[in-house]
Structure formats: C-alpha cells, structure tokens
Amino acid sequence: MNERKLSAWVEAGVIDAAAAERIRAYEGQHTRPLALWAVIGIGALAIGLGLISVVAANWDAIPAMVRLGLHFTLLIAAAAALWWQAGTRRPWAEEALLFVFGALGLTFMGHLGQAYQTTSPLWQPLALWLALFGPLFLLRGQGWLTALAFAGVLMVAVWNFALDRGGLDNWFLFLALPAALPLALAPLGAVLRARSERVAFWRRIEELGFAYVLGGASLIAILAGTTSLMHGGDADKVLMTLLTWAAAGFGAAGLVWITRRDRSGQAGAMMLAAAAVVTMLAWPLSGGRVIGALLFMALWGAVAAMALRGGWRGVFQFAVAVLALRLIVLSFELDDNLLTSGAGLIVAGLLILGIAWVALRVARKYAPPREAGA
Figure (tube, rainbow, N blue to C red):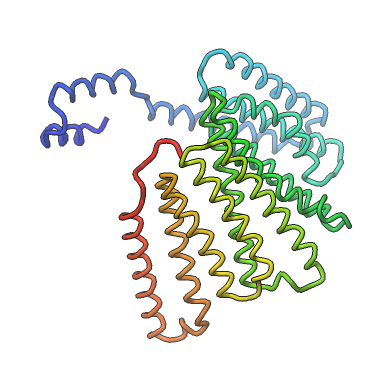
C-alpha cells in the first residue's frame, strides 16, 4: 500500500484515521511478496535458460528417441499437474499450467517432424493442435493467456491454410471461408460469457473476435485506398472473399444482438455490422486515396459512437486516437511535397498538435465513465 497516498487521503478528509488503519491491516494480511517472487522467477528463468543452452549445445549428440522421450515425459507431467490443480480452485495456477501444457504439445509436434525429417505446411500441425488441445482450452481456460493462445493459433492456422491452398480453383472453400472463420470468436464469446462461470475467459475470446473483425476491415479500407479492387485478373475472387467476410460479419452481429440484449451487446453488434458494411463498400469504391481514408474513418467513427453507447471508455479513447492518427497520415498523403520545405514542416507540426489537442478534448468530454466489464 502507498503510505504517502494514504496519509494524503487522511489529511484531505477523504477517509478518517480509523479507516486508514483498517486499510493498512487488510493490505498487510493480503500483501504479496512481489520482490521475492521476482527473485524466484529470475532464478527459475536462469535455470531454464541454462538447461536449454546445455541441450542446444549437445542437440546432435542426443539420440532423437531420447529427446522425444524426454519431451513426451514433460508433456505427461504437465498433464498430471493440470489434472491435480483442477480441483484446488486456483485459477491463476490452472491458467499457467494449461498454457504450458498447450505449448509443450505444440512444440512436440514440431520436434516430432524435426526428428523424423518430415515437412508439412504450418496449418497442418496447428489444425491438429486445435483438434487435440483446443477443446481443453475452451473448457478450462480462465483468462487472457489461454484465450490469446487459442485465438492466435486459430488465426495463424486459417491464414496459413488460405495462403497455402488459395491458388486452387475453389477460391471460396480454400480462401474466403477460412479467412472468415475467426469472426465466429465474437459471437462465441458473447453467447458463452452469459452461460459460463469463466466470464473472464469468454470475454477475452469475444474481444479477440472483435479485434480480428475491426483489424481486418481496417486493412481492407487501407487496401481500397491504394489499389482498385474491381480490376485485375482476380477481381471476381476478391469480390467473393469480401462478400463472404461481410456475410460472416453480419451473421456475427446478429448472434451478438440476439444473445446480449443490453446496451453493451447492442453496441458490439452494430460495431460488427459497421465493419461488414465497410467491407462491402470497399470493392466498388476502391481506387481513390481519399475514399479509402473516408472508409477507414467511417469505420472508426462508428466504433467510437458505439463505444459511447456501450460505455466502453477504453475503446472510445482508442478509436478517437486512431481517427486522429489517420487524419495526420491523410494530410501527408494529400500533399506529397509537404516535407520538402521548412514551412511544410511547420504546417505539419501545427496540424499534428491541433489534431492531438482536439482528440484529447473530445476524449475527455465524451468518453463514458469507466466500466468494469466491457
């Protein structure tokens, strides 16, 4: 506990001396020896790095079956520790063990391929990992660590599959549909966070789905400002991909709207729908620098508006910052010679400061109050 701040609160009359003593007593009983844990962590890290260095230095001298046996033994040990930890009601320990178990499983697949000198596209071991370990992550995940691991493996797997198989004739099956698959994370998290005790995990899954949708729509808007998507040999395939992405976005928005009938859920659904609309408009409106910037700013303007409706303070402030940054970038795009003179540098600096000031005022005036659950 910060003793100086506590004394300042007593002097300002925010709390009385008795309340301050109760706070000190509570914090003294619940304090965590962070310095000690940091020392223990550094020591464990040093031992781990030392073991890795010893193994790496003698990697070729260790028979492949011995290496695989040791790796498999570690995998079984992690599984046993996870099973033992499951009933102790310490979610942070279960989260860490589950992540280690999944990491050992994923690296074991790579180790197996290295030992037997076999190669395969990246999506194949990732898909196998999702089939074997994904259900356990979804059933036992507790927070950010496991949610990010599961969603990250899914996103990398589908995009590697799309890039590896996208040259085949069936563009929809091998590119458009896989690329849109992670959009399902948003409605999946929205549905299960209201029906599960692991609210934190499903909220993170939902947020990662939103990040994927908004990030994808933003990249599409940027691409629309740099090239014409309607022309070229693959224009029909690009259209099919964008329509598939938009349809998946509208479907996800509908599921979120039906599942979460509060203001926050409705705001999230309209945010997904806005991303789908921008994705659809990118194809016919592509080819103009200004049009691409307007699509991008329309998307993030909708995000800011929906964040106000849903009470998402952090999302609102982030959206305002993105809009301000895009305006700054647009100012350079519209005048390629802006930086070729001292006057241009002065104008650019004043513009950046002005946009930053406006963005700060807007964020302070209109940002909703902090909300514990987004």
